[in-house]
Image (cartoon, rainbow, N blue to C red; front, top):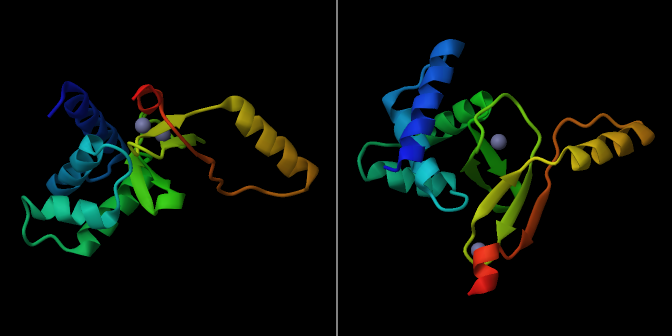
Length: 147
Ligand SMILES: [Zn+2]
Ligand SMILES: [Zn+2]
């Protein structure tokens, strides 16, 4: 486990404690798998990963954990891949954009206030109330362009 992973797991624990939310041992294991995954990970792959240490793991275990993490803003859904990534901030609810590498499948989370502002402005112009939004850009990351 990298220092980063254990720091983030501790942060998740602290946040759950302060919010009165239950960060169970299984949820901790699932979040660890997500933090260690390169790129987005599907519920199916998470179940496989969990079964490595927890043979009795069932799909509802994963779905409940994912719902919980989404509620706590620990993870984000990658809509175009029907998969999930661990958040890089673990802060309160926030808008984000994703850069997805087609070669190594790395997913970078970025936060552009300008993009957010443009969407809000357009919504106002169209008298539209935005509930959720997805900005996912596909291409090549820095490393893959060097290879
Ligand atoms: Zn985030
Ligand atoms: Zn790449």
